[in-house]
Length: 188
Image (cartoon, rainbow, N blue to C red):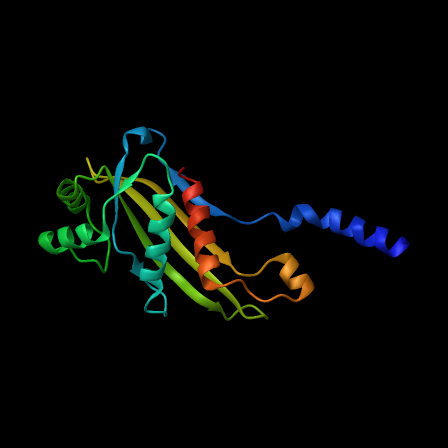
Protein backbone atom coordinates (compact mmCIF):
# COMPACT_ATOMS: atom_id res chain seq x y z
CA UNK A 1 0.00 0.00 0.00
CA UNK A 2 2.90 2.36 0.80
CA UNK A 3 4.42 1.74 -2.60
CA UNK A 4 1.11 2.52 -4.33
CA UNK A 5 0.83 5.83 -2.43
CA UNK A 6 4.40 6.74 -3.33
CA UNK A 7 3.74 6.04 -7.03
CA UNK A 8 0.47 7.98 -6.92
CA UNK A 9 2.24 10.96 -5.31
CA UNK A 10 5.01 10.80 -7.90
CA UNK A 11 2.45 10.72 -10.71
CA UNK A 12 0.66 13.76 -9.27
CA UNK A 13 3.91 15.67 -8.98
CA UNK A 14 4.91 14.85 -12.55
CA UNK A 15 1.50 15.56 -14.08
CA UNK A 16 2.09 19.31 -14.62
CA UNK A 17 5.36 18.59 -16.43
CA UNK A 18 3.71 16.05 -18.72
CA UNK A 19 1.21 18.52 -20.12
CA UNK A 20 3.73 21.26 -20.83
CA UNK A 21 4.70 21.49 -24.46
CA UNK A 22 6.86 24.17 -26.07
CA UNK A 23 4.09 25.08 -28.53
CA UNK A 24 4.62 27.60 -31.26
CA UNK A 25 6.62 30.81 -31.36
CA UNK A 26 4.30 33.29 -33.02
CA UNK A 27 3.96 36.86 -34.22
CA UNK A 28 0.57 38.49 -34.80
CA UNK A 29 0.33 42.07 -36.02
CA UNK A 30 -1.82 43.87 -33.50
CA UNK A 31 -3.00 46.63 -35.84
CA UNK A 32 -4.86 44.23 -38.19
CA UNK A 33 -8.55 43.42 -37.96
CA UNK A 34 -8.64 39.68 -38.65
CA UNK A 35 -12.45 39.63 -38.77
CA UNK A 36 -12.44 40.80 -42.40
CA UNK A 37 -10.49 37.73 -43.51
CA UNK A 38 -13.00 35.25 -44.86
CA UNK A 39 -11.59 33.79 -48.07
CA UNK A 40 -8.05 32.43 -47.84
CA UNK A 41 -5.67 30.57 -50.11
CA UNK A 42 -2.79 28.27 -49.21
CA UNK A 43 0.33 28.63 -51.34
CA UNK A 44 2.26 25.36 -51.92
CA UNK A 45 4.68 24.86 -49.04
CA UNK A 46 8.40 25.23 -49.55
CA UNK A 47 10.27 22.08 -48.56
CA UNK A 48 13.77 22.30 -47.08
CA UNK A 49 13.63 18.83 -45.52
CA UNK A 50 15.30 15.74 -46.96
CA UNK A 51 11.94 13.98 -47.40
CA UNK A 52 10.80 15.16 -50.84
CA UNK A 53 7.14 14.73 -49.87
CA UNK A 54 7.28 16.66 -46.58
CA UNK A 55 5.89 19.85 -48.11
CA UNK A 56 2.91 18.25 -49.82
CA UNK A 57 2.09 16.04 -46.80
CA UNK A 58 2.16 19.01 -44.43
CA UNK A 59 0.19 21.13 -46.93
CA UNK A 60 -2.58 18.53 -46.99
CA UNK A 61 -2.81 18.38 -43.19
CA UNK A 62 -2.64 22.19 -42.92
CA UNK A 63 -5.49 22.59 -45.41
CA UNK A 64 -7.64 20.03 -43.57
CA UNK A 65 -7.07 21.79 -40.24
CA UNK A 66 -7.77 25.16 -41.82
CA UNK A 67 -11.11 23.93 -43.19
CA UNK A 68 -12.20 23.21 -39.60
CA UNK A 69 -12.06 26.92 -38.76
CA UNK A 70 -15.47 28.55 -38.59
CA UNK A 71 -16.06 31.44 -40.95
CA UNK A 72 -13.21 30.72 -43.33
CA UNK A 73 -13.52 29.65 -46.93
CA UNK A 74 -10.41 28.12 -48.47
CA UNK A 75 -9.71 28.48 -52.17
CA UNK A 76 -9.48 25.07 -53.85
CA UNK A 77 -5.85 23.93 -54.35
CA UNK A 78 -6.42 23.42 -58.08
CA UNK A 79 -7.62 27.01 -58.42
CA UNK A 80 -4.52 28.19 -56.53
CA UNK A 81 -2.20 26.21 -58.83
CA UNK A 82 -4.00 27.52 -61.92
CA UNK A 83 -3.53 31.13 -60.78
CA UNK A 84 0.14 30.46 -59.94
CA UNK A 85 0.72 29.13 -63.47
CA UNK A 86 -1.21 32.01 -65.04
CA UNK A 87 0.81 34.60 -63.09
CA UNK A 88 4.05 32.62 -63.71
CA UNK A 89 4.96 32.57 -60.04
CA UNK A 90 7.79 30.46 -58.66
CA UNK A 91 6.58 28.04 -55.96
CA UNK A 92 10.15 27.28 -54.86
CA UNK A 93 10.66 30.46 -52.87
CA UNK A 94 8.98 33.42 -51.22
CA UNK A 95 6.80 35.89 -53.10
CA UNK A 96 7.32 39.64 -52.96
CA UNK A 97 4.50 41.90 -51.77
CA UNK A 98 3.28 42.75 -55.28
CA UNK A 99 3.09 39.07 -56.21
CA UNK A 100 1.00 38.42 -53.08
CA UNK A 101 -1.35 41.26 -54.09
CA UNK A 102 -1.62 39.94 -57.67
CA UNK A 103 -2.27 36.36 -56.54
CA UNK A 104 -4.83 37.54 -54.00
CA UNK A 105 -6.64 39.53 -56.68
CA UNK A 106 -6.63 36.57 -59.09
CA UNK A 107 -8.06 34.27 -56.38
CA UNK A 108 -10.36 36.87 -54.80
CA UNK A 109 -8.70 35.93 -51.51
CA UNK A 110 -8.41 38.19 -48.46
CA UNK A 111 -5.20 36.49 -47.31
CA UNK A 112 -2.72 33.81 -48.33
CA UNK A 113 -1.03 31.25 -46.08
CA UNK A 114 2.58 30.23 -46.72
CA UNK A 115 4.63 27.45 -45.16
CA UNK A 116 8.20 26.23 -45.05
CA UNK A 117 9.06 22.75 -43.85
CA UNK A 118 12.51 23.02 -42.33
CA UNK A 119 12.97 19.52 -40.93
CA UNK A 120 10.77 16.43 -41.16
CA UNK A 121 11.13 12.74 -40.38
CA UNK A 122 13.04 10.69 -37.84
CA UNK A 123 15.01 12.69 -35.30
CA UNK A 124 18.56 11.41 -35.34
CA UNK A 125 19.53 13.36 -32.21
CA UNK A 126 17.14 11.41 -29.99
CA UNK A 127 18.33 8.22 -28.31
CA UNK A 128 15.06 6.60 -29.34
CA UNK A 129 13.75 6.89 -32.89
CA UNK A 130 11.02 9.53 -32.85
CA UNK A 131 9.32 11.46 -35.61
CA UNK A 132 9.61 15.23 -35.64
CA UNK A 133 8.82 18.31 -37.69
CA UNK A 134 10.07 21.88 -37.66
CA UNK A 135 8.03 24.26 -39.76
CA UNK A 136 7.27 27.94 -40.24
CA UNK A 137 3.89 29.25 -41.35
CA UNK A 138 2.80 32.77 -42.24
CA UNK A 139 -0.24 34.70 -43.43
CA UNK A 140 -0.12 37.72 -45.73
CA UNK A 141 -3.10 39.96 -46.35
CA UNK A 142 -3.65 40.59 -50.05
CA UNK A 143 -4.48 44.30 -50.03
CA UNK A 144 -0.83 45.32 -49.48
CA UNK A 145 0.94 41.95 -49.43
CA UNK A 146 2.12 42.47 -45.85
CA UNK A 147 2.79 39.65 -43.44
CA UNK A 148 0.26 39.75 -40.58
CA UNK A 149 0.98 36.46 -38.79
CA UNK A 150 3.82 34.01 -38.56
CA UNK A 151 4.52 30.99 -36.43
CA UNK A 152 7.41 28.59 -36.08
CA UNK A 153 6.79 25.24 -34.46
CA UNK A 154 8.82 22.17 -33.57
CA UNK A 155 6.99 19.00 -32.60
CA UNK A 156 8.20 15.50 -31.80
CA UNK A 157 6.46 12.17 -31.37
CA UNK A 158 8.08 11.73 -28.00
CA UNK A 159 6.73 12.67 -24.60
CA UNK A 160 7.81 12.35 -21.00
CA UNK A 161 5.41 9.46 -20.42
CA UNK A 162 6.54 7.64 -23.57
CA UNK A 163 10.15 7.94 -22.45
CA UNK A 164 9.29 6.92 -18.89
CA UNK A 165 7.34 3.83 -19.89
CA UNK A 166 9.30 2.91 -23.04
CA UNK A 167 6.71 3.74 -25.68
CA UNK A 168 7.67 4.51 -29.24
CA UNK A 169 6.97 7.59 -31.27
CA UNK A 170 3.53 8.56 -32.44
CA UNK A 171 3.08 8.51 -36.22
CA UNK A 172 4.44 11.19 -38.54
CA UNK A 173 0.86 12.16 -39.36
CA UNK A 174 0.03 12.80 -35.69
CA UNK A 175 3.26 14.75 -35.15
CA UNK A 176 2.55 16.94 -38.20
CA UNK A 177 -1.08 17.45 -37.22
CA UNK A 178 -0.06 18.50 -33.69
CA UNK A 179 2.48 20.98 -35.12
CA UNK A 180 -0.09 22.51 -37.47
CA UNK A 181 -2.64 22.78 -34.66
CA UNK A 182 -0.11 24.44 -32.36
CA UNK A 183 0.70 27.00 -35.05
CA UNK A 184 -2.92 27.73 -35.96
CA UNK A 185 -3.92 28.07 -32.28
CA UNK A 186 -1.78 31.19 -32.14
CA UNK A 187 -3.97 32.71 -34.85
CA UNK A 188 -7.47 31.42 -34.16
